[in-house]
Every structure is written in structure tokens, then in C-alpha cells.
Image 1 (tube, helix red, strand yellow):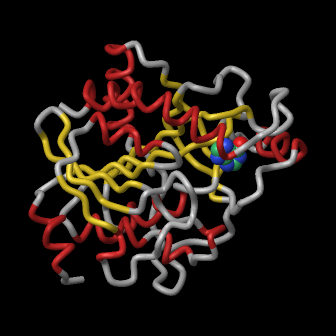
Image 2 (image 1 turned 90 degrees about the horizontal axis):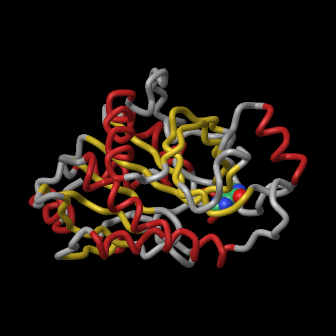
Length: 256
Ligand code: HPA
């Protein structure tokens, strides 16, 4: 992987990257992005097709430490392979990143975790039926996929700033349709607290490359059948924008 765009990412010298999910692009307003590089400048980077996903890297800083922001991602449900949806993670690793923070918008299946709050992933259920390691098999250990050391640091940051941060299990599904109430009940029985359509494959790819991973769900809605309301992508984006400020505070309190 050698091109001019990668060189620009690498020159930023960031060790930490943050992947921003649906509607969470507003976070970059709080993280001083001084320069942007479109995903399209990288050979073979698939273009996001969903609203709320900008499709660019931003060079930013948190507490005067450089970070890379990946604004927007591609999903399996856009018709891309598991390998394609994890291109961004391989680029970040090639740019010298050692730690990734993966964010997403998710439905909450846990009655104690209200929409509008954040959940840190302690583990996941990969229910996509696929893996980015297919074709280049590696039998990687996912016991501590979401770094327990880093989780402790974020919990401390949440306590210091008063940001409501739950901790739970994320179920990653194929999508793009939202779940039926029966599916949500099943996922709850399987141990899921939050449900979404991303993140799990990126975690697998990041761990295979030896990166440390933290994962966060912006809980944008009750999963189907739990609340009264019906689900819409527009509502998911609006709630995500409102919760972005909380997450920016959490990052500033933790990445020191
Ligand atoms: N289910 C799956 N993905 C989602 C949801 C949901 O309820 N909300 C946001 N992304």
C-alpha cells in the first residue's frame, strides 16, 4: 500500500483512530479537523452509499495529541464483501495507527439502557455469517477483543465527566432492514444489549492486525418491539448528532 494519500495519513503520526458511524460525523466539529482526505483518493477503497456517512479521513487532535478520524464506513448490506468493509482498518494500520475506537449507531435491546445514551462494548456477537479473514485464514483469539484496560480508562473518563456510559454486548447483523420484534427477543435471549449492522468485522480485522480496540454504540432507538415508536434512519441520525457532544467529552477526558 503506497500512495500519496497514505503518506499524508502516515505523516500525521497518529497512534489512535476513531471510526465514526451513522450521524456521528458531527464529532469532528469538536476535534479540530485541520485537513481531510476523501476515501476515493485511496485505490480500492469502496465508497459509502448511505446518508450520514461522509467517506473521508480527517486529521484531528484530542488534548493536543494527533488522531485520525474515519468519517463514515461501508457495510455488508451495501453489497460489499467482509474484506471490502474492513479496508479502512487496514489503511489505518498501514498509516501507523495502534489503537482504534469504533463507533456506531445501534438499537437498544436492554430496557435499562435508554436511547440517547452510550454503550461501550465489552463483547460482541458476530451474526453476519462472514469474516474479513476468509481467504487468508488466521485463528485469532477474541477473548479480550475490546481491550479491558482501555475499557477501564473510558469508564473512569465517563465518571469524571458525568457522561452516562453503559457497558454491554453488541450483536452485529447483516441488515439493512431493522429486526422484527421476534428477532429482537431472540437476540436478547442470546445476550445482546445493543443491535446494529457494523463494527464486528472491523474489530476482527483490527485484532488480526494487532490493534487495540474500543467500541461504542450510540443508542439511537429502542430495538423493534421494545418501545412504542417505529424505526427510521432519519431519527437514528438526529439522535446520533445530539449524542456526539457527550462522546467528545468522553474522548477528551480519556485520551490524555
Ligand atoms: N437495529 C439495527 N441497527 C440499528 C438500529 C436497530 O434498531 N438502530 C440503529 N442501527
